[in-house]
Amino acid sequence: MSELMIKAREGRRIALSAVRRIEDNVFADIHPRSDAQLQQVLKHAC
Image 1: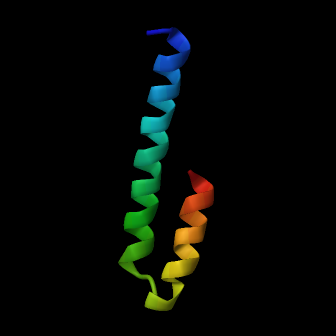
Image 2: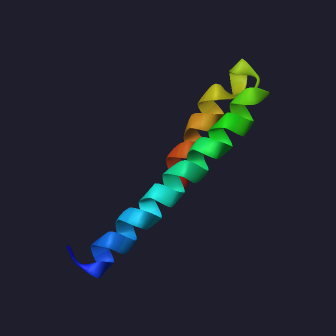
């Protein structure tokens, strides 16, 4: 596997764990109506 592939995979792993952390924080105190809005934000973040 090329070095670039390894770096891309590592970057993706870091990004996914960051998104998970954000989700945990946001869902802890989110209003149900904001759910669709949150999905939009997460879609753009990925």
